Length: 318
Image (cartoon, rainbow, N blue to C red):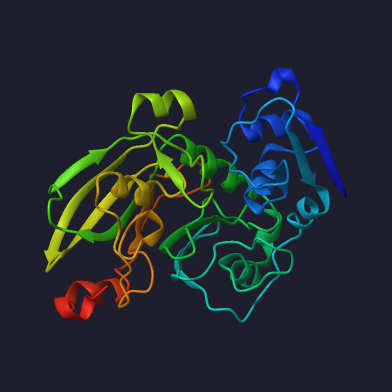
């Protein structure tokens, strides 16, 4: 597919999710390619972008930009001189520490400055491994403004093993976050299922009411947490998930009225002293299997989050 192609939603796809309808209509596009195409805006409904979980109606027109879709499969540009902090390295696995502000992988053709560019620059063999050429070896992603640990497979066999382990909850991931301390329990579990937001594709939607569950067909999601310490108005929280859905921790804490410090997208107040949302992927572990040995890797709290906890109340003005 190299040109824009239009499809009219037939009767049998009335009320289907956008991603499923698009896959049913465009037979030459894989599931992974379609997911990326929708996220990039290469799929439009009546000329407008919609999230993959949005529902389509019969008679609506789906337009798929084949040229944009094919560009997304170009390999990440190698940047050998780019900074890359490796926390763990074995013949089969890397665990790297991504700084806040750096995208995990490129969204556009020839884009540079992402973690993927740095990875393929130092480890050229990664170019042929992973979900797509622009995601060399990457098992998962972090939001651009989230800092912390990312697991990378160095061989195709290791990628398949780790991908299966991730889906079966055998890769343990923990995060540290900062949110308002007042009214937050010392520990807890948040289990609202999560759907694509019906009106804003930048966000996800935690379904707290049964009618939302019936309407949006959300995916199960569970976040457990423990408050490790408090400092002034803030709490430093350790949150644990297995397979984290997109924005899961951010949306879950917003749902209990404790959005992350600096997370304006989910209702948190802007914190000028921080300049981003306060979320850090601090720990990842795997018990090991066949060719992939066990690993247990931690990353310290980054200086900007530590400084927020240590700041005097007046200096954290929002």
